[in-house]
Length: 99
Image (tube, rainbow, N blue to C red; front, side, top):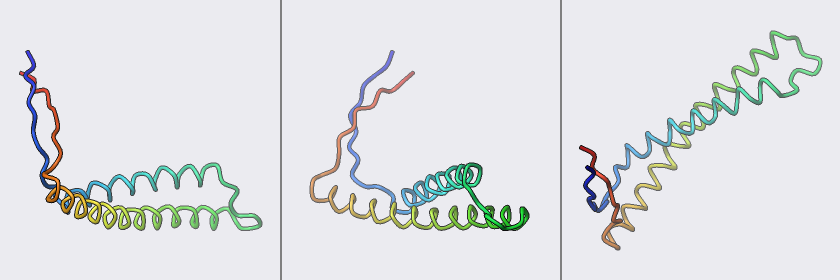
């Protein structure tokens, strides 16, 4: 039997939301980078080793930059949500509790 319960979200953890978005965006950059590397038209006239090295470096840089941007964006969003929650009293969420 499942019991329904209503809870109210009044605050988001700024660091935890920032970390969540950092990981999410870094994974997005990794997947996108691999797809671009696999299907892109790189190295017109460059050697194979140079092309592979440049592609891998680009993927790693993208993962780091997207991760940093995701952290900053997520932390700012959580901070703004907390300001709005303080003014409005939060958000009610219905949850089902499983036995």
